[in-house]
Image (cartoon, rainbow, N blue to C red; front, side, top):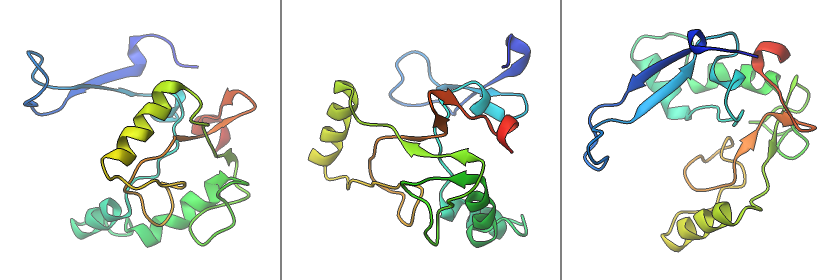
Length: 150
């Protein structure tokens, strides 16, 4: 497991209108094998398909959503989500949903629904916009870092 500040980098977003006197939001990322997933909660988010397609459109050949999908599928294993055209079922990272059991989580999801956001059981599936409890790469109570699993 990473230790010390040598494993971290911080970036600031552009100044944000509603952040009070701070002006920007500080983003801390992991600088180690496995990236931020080695030190954070291990939330499993693939990235939006349109972002991959835009990267290829900007010159990153082979980085469109169709080209990277097989790599995501090979990396994940999920009884809950796997075995479909978009999700893997026999990779080294076990992916599951966190239950929305905490009152704050359930309150957040209720507020999303009250404001017209659709519920998404699988936000790494066909449609990513909406609200959901998080998916993670935690198995039997332990984080599965890509640095150890892949």
